[in-house]
Picture 1: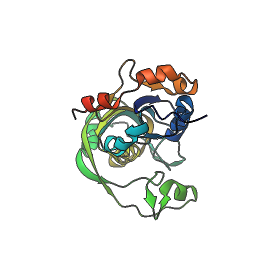
Picture 2: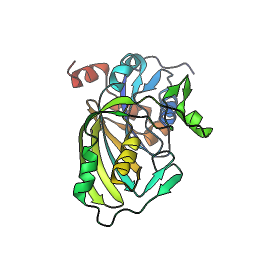
Picture 3: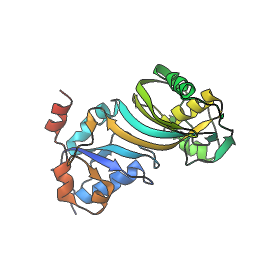
Picture 4: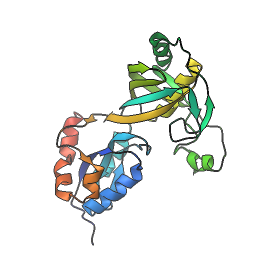
Length: 243
């Protein structure tokens, strides 16, 4: 069947767990019968929430949309570090969480990672070294030096602190690894930590609104008319961004 080249716009998808961003793109291509679809910022299989798809001529603004800040909610689990810095990896080390750990101490550790700083990408990431993604090297049991990257945390807050679990919200720049953020906070507290849950709630000027986003199930079930009804036109995007 010939690809439909008449569809142009931005689609906000609420990604579920246990699927890659590429999986979402592949299912969207089948649902809409079109090839020219890209996404604006990878979400790990464990993560849920906003995945922006650009359709047709909207792929021209893919880099622009990817460059904008993001907002996440998540949970870090104190007391264990893992090979991937999240719950999908193997536990590397376990340490007891101090019984006298206070909310003020946890807040102080979070505050260490506010504003501008450098962050080293994790080995399990899509960053390329000599053209090879780090995650492929990690699968071979290799660890290589990574260049620290300049990142920014605009805002953060702790929404629940019941050790070993700490719920938080963070607003950050492009290229920020929340997994590494959780890991480094655990290092500051001396007992280690890893990311156990993550949800992207906003990307740039985009947030979830009724009728203006779709689910993976809607795409998988081929509900094309409902999907198109939720799509934002390039005019909608321009107006939303104040361009």
